[in-house]
Length: 86
Image (cartoon, rainbow, N blue to C red; front, side, top):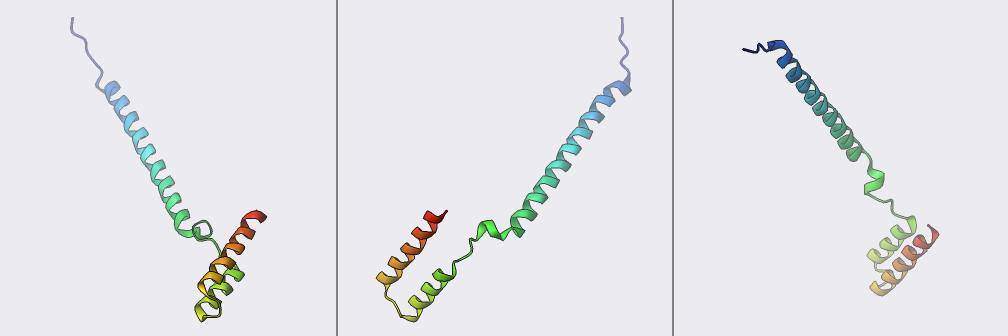
């Protein structure tokens, strides 16, 4: 006995598989583009804002108003005070 297979039934499964693959690729592409745009535009997480006191300390050190030891002591005081506040 010879079994006759409907050609369209076999194609239906392949078409469904390809539709699912294309949809998965489109979803991954959309998620990837969204992640890339967010990563490139969100600067607040990547670069923490410098404190005005820290900028002044750096300026005074660069101008020679304070020496290296004084700079590091005051910088440590500033960063410790920031970490204990939250």
